Amino acid sequence: MKWSPKWTAVTGLSLIALVNLIVLIGVAYNRSGEPESRLRLTERELSVPRPWAFQKENSGLSLKLLWRVRDEESEGRAYYFGFVSVGGRATWLDGAKLKELGIEPPSSTATEAQKRRYDKLGAKEVFLALEFDGPTYRAVLERTRETAQRSQNEEAAGKAQWRAKWLRHEESESSRLFVIDAGLDAANLRAKYPDRTRYSIVRGRVHPPTTRYGKGEWGRVEGLAIDSVNVPLEFRPVFEGLTSRGYYPSAESPAGPKFEAAVAFGKRLEPSLTGATRKP
Amino acid sequence: MLLLTDEQTRALDRYHGDLLGQFAQVFDVDTDSQAKQLSLGMRIASLIGALALGASVFFLFFQIWGLFATPVQVAILVLAALGTFVATLLIQRREGSGYFTKLAALVAFVCFVLNIAMLGRIFDVTPSDKALIPWAALALLLAYACDLRLLLVAGLLCIIAFIGSRTGTVGGMYWLYFGERPENFFPAALILFLVPQVIPHHRFGGFAATFRVMALLTLFLPMLVLANWGDLSYLPWDEHILKNTYQVLGFAASALVAWLGVQKGWVHVVNTGVVFFLIFLYTKFFDWWWEIMPKYLFFLVVGMTAVLFLMIFRRLRMRIA
Image (cartoon, rainbow over all chains, first blue to last red; front, side, top):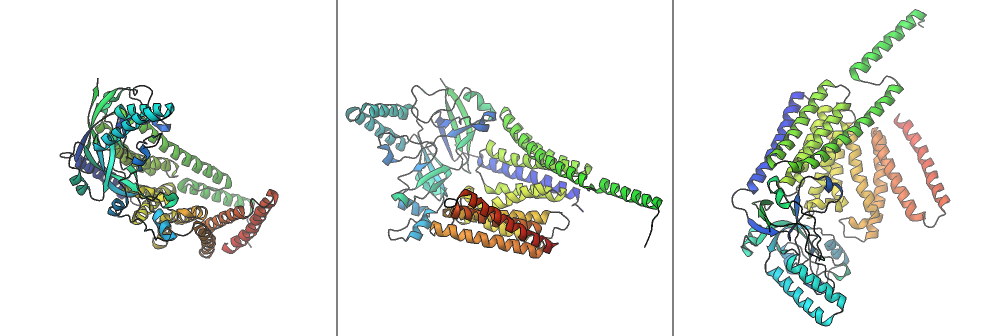
């Protein structure tokens, strides 16, 4: 004996319709009114994903947000790679900030069991502050210039060459989008960074440091909840001919056309592409 | 003692043959071993066809969605989900065997999963484990309405993932990483095992067994992982202690499950318990003896253990029968 076919049909159709309605209402709410923030990004901060595996058969286009975390300690190294969009250790994610985020680092007198419990803490969902072309980028650029200058005067030719190449990369190719802060309350974070054309508040994840290997000082920004932006059909011509760009210094200018795109973060802090133009 | 003439015997044979033919036609049952083998082949073909069609729908949409404007994309997604669901119910009304219904139902489920997943991608919606709830709901609706264990498994996988992610978030972790701590699956295993006890499934052949087997897989696979990589546990103990603890728990739980299956007459539970007992046992044999024993001796021990279990199974089978 089976369930009534009529009841099954009504239930199933209602379920599908209702879920779609809920999703679309959420989208409409996110995009309603003035956006929470709006950034004007370029090919330095938005990239076509690499065509791996099934990506080659994907006719849609999503641009990947290239964001960075400043790690002052690593910047001073001879060969610094400045990893992009894979997270990184953040010197601002220290003990005090971790406590603010509800992560209590173990004390110096903690037992092995307490340290193990702490090391097993996973990534925590928080709000992150993204800064575009702001003081953090300027500080990174200034330090890169100083290091390049020092390399010319003091270091071996190979390192000096690499440093010069890296300076060119920072000046004209690298992303100017940095994760600079984290908090549990989006409103408080916005109050700290009120400029909505330079700072965006987004959802993301941070990871506490591990006590192993003596690396217990700073936490790690692990990722953003959404780190790509879908390109609607009307904007696709702007990105024609775009190829995935490398994240490291290139021998010549980056491949593909240059563009400027407006990315709006709505009420639910979800991004959408609201405009795009090609630059000559 | 009744003695039949040849004519009477032939008439009786004709009557039984007609009866079996009617049963086969009306209830689609197998009346001999040949029909049974063909049915098994059809079930396998149906399963492979269902999975392949589902994958085809997924990749088809992946290939064409970028060619349309956003309103058209949304319309295609919603209409595909609604249309394939309706098609499944229509096919089920016309077809008694369930093979084509299974194909259609899995395509309908894949279309609905695609519907929600692609809306999330088109509008850059924050990923959430809440999407698992409607997916599970539709899978279970199709499973119970069309008597399909494949869709029941799909629905249960969604439920297991949802309970696991919620258990993980209670523990403070980001929901998507719930797989990093295998203990997140234990509550789901317990719930699934208890469901057929609380809600009888007499009208649905094989559903209760499916619940129990899925529950046991959800229990034992994480235990097996923890028995080899104890550091993945939530518990702040030394890794070796954790590994040994879960190895002992694995042995004890699988033996207990096999015993419970014998007591209740649940063959699938007995088989699952015994299989995992053997897996835990052979994992320990490997840890203890692979390096120190000559290989011929190691495999001899494994083989002799299998013979011992064969004798135990024979006794268990006689007892259940």
